[in-house]
Amino acid sequence: MKMNNIKAVLFDLNVTLVPSIFQSDRRLENVKQIIAKIKRAKYKVGIVSNCTHREVLKKIEELGIGGFIDAIATPKNEYEKKPRRKIFFKAMEKLDVKPSQTLFVGDHLVYDIFGARLCGMKTMLIKKKFKTYHKLIFSLKPIFGPDFFANNLREVLDVLRRL
Image (cartoon, rainbow, N blue to C red):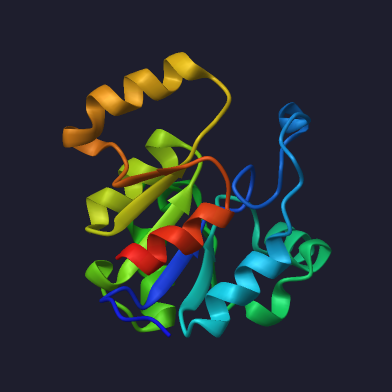
């Protein structure tokens, strides 16, 4: 059972939940099991993606997580895409949560982390393989870097326990 102020976890979809072709060295994680554990801990779960709504539905069906997702936010046009704030607020509105009650998990510094931080959310960056990228992000953290780093999705559960 959760004991913190966080009530919802929003996820980016591509690369964060659905591995890219460039992540062949990344061990395939059991996304369904991780999302189920987050739901059992009484968090609301949502997806914020720049993909079309149809693409998102197809991917969550392939992952087997459709029954765990409480909200999906996709852009209606180019002006609603991440990192713009509107798409993040759309998801939070659907979940009836405030930015201070939300953790956003993504893999991209600008589209995911910067956008979510602009809204006032806590953020977690799933690390990519490129070490120079991580050094850059660490140096920028006070400005718009993530609140937390993770090597994989399983670490989301650890961070939620610590919050």
